[in-house]
Every structure is written in structure tokens, then in C-alpha cells.
Amino acid sequence: MSGSVLVTWATKYGSTEEVAQTVAAVLRDEGIAVDARRPLHEIETLDRIDAVVLGCALYMGRMHRDVRRFLSTHRHALGRMPVAIFVLGPVHKEEGEFAQARRHVDKGLARFPWLHPQALEIFGGAWNPAKLGIPFRWTLRSVPALDARDWDAIRSWAHTVAAGLHSGVAK
Image (tube, rainbow, N blue to C red; front, side, top):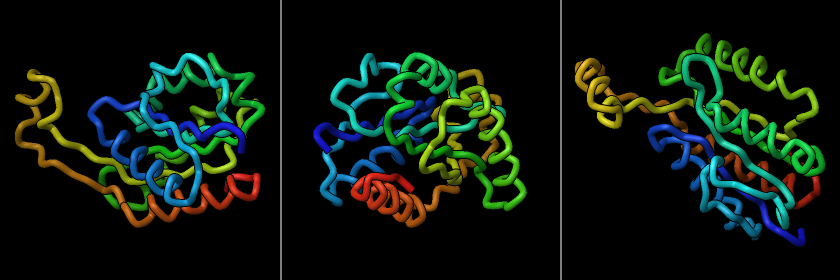
């Protein structure tokens, strides 16, 4: 690769960025040049970028609006490079919730028929009412924080993405 891999994210409360930074660290450990300094809404160009790893969470069954905007804005560049996507979904580790999250992701990505991610994974998400704004935090103060992120699975997926990038095809 002559350029680098952009690892970018859309997040409301920070848990997606934490996963993105973990993915970026694994890619760096695998010898890949990584740019992981900016959330999606700050990306203006994909010049000198060879591949993109994009992370987002599902909110009420939809991907973050910054993801939709990013995919639309950078359609032509993204259509010519490997794209890997991870999505944080359920905060409970129940199979039915993961299946439902997959349906939501598939529906969201159907709006971009030109996009064919070479790697797509749904991980458990995190919910921390302490990170909400004041009216919501007060209303939901009795709801416990939940974290269904599987860090071993996240790192394993990142290693698979790295292997795909080294071979020229993200997995």
C-alpha cells in the first residue's frame, strides 16, 4: 500500500471510537499505516487513502446520520477501495437482538447499492446513561450501564481485516 488505511467512526457517546482505536491499534501492530485521528464528520477527502475501516453504532435501528452522509459524499472514492465496516448493536448478548441488528444494518446499507464491504461485522454495543445529556440522564438514572462489546472478537476481526489488506482483499 502506498497510502494508509483510514479508521474512522461516528459516535454519540464514545464507545464506537474506543472500538475504532482498538481496531487501529491491531492494524498498526500488523504493520499497516493507519490514520485514526478523526471522526467521520471531519473527513474531507480520501486522497492518499488506500482503504477505509468505518465504525458506527445503531441508534433506534438506524446507522448514524454521519455514516449516511459520508457514504454519499465519498461514493466514488469508496467504490474503488476496500471498505470494512463494524457496527455496534445490541447491548445484551442475545442472538435475536444480533439478528435484528443485522437486518437493520442490511436495510441501511441497501441505500448504497454500489457499496460492497469486504468485511462487515456487528459487535455488541455499550450503553452508559451517565454519558447522556441532563434531561435523559435524569429520566434514565435507574437504568444500569451495559457493555456487550467482546474485545477478543473485535481484535480477532481486526486481525482478519489486516490479513485481507495485506493480501489485497479485506475479509
